[in-house]
Image 1: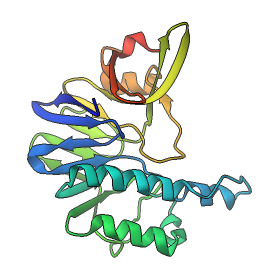
Image 2: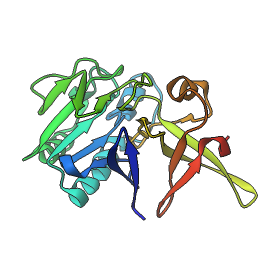
Image 3: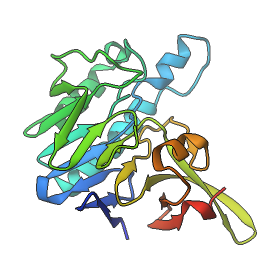
Image 4: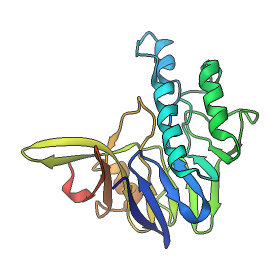
Length: 223
């Protein structure tokens, strides 16, 4: 199972194993927290990471776009790791991103890491987007019909005498927090009180990104 069905505010969506969300009726693909050029950002502060995160992230994004061929894409904020990250993109990475945007509508939601994406970078820049009952924004508020990123949810799941920690979609039937898509992004445990503020209690579901399929687990079973 590369995807699993999720209903949010009466809308049927599909969570893809890559960490993207699909709204088939709208021809829409949603990703969150690409954090492009995180490696080069750390390098400017003397923390040396392999400079391959942007290539890896764009390659994964290209694969999921090729698989679903969406008419439009929404990137839910923190697409770039800092305000100057887009300037550090290599020519090849910039061309790869331009190719992904070709012949489809592309919406950049501004995030706390990238509040001022240049308007000439391709696509449209917005603070949030509403389509029907669904509101797409970067930081979750807990509102009904909200799909957001920012928190980088991960779940720690007990299995066969050990624990496995993976990224996940966190949701109930009213709202959803996306997993981070970027190659170098970390995660926040879904048992952190930041998620309690969004969902009200740990009575929500984690759709955990496994090796070959998504695993649907009650958040209360994670730790």
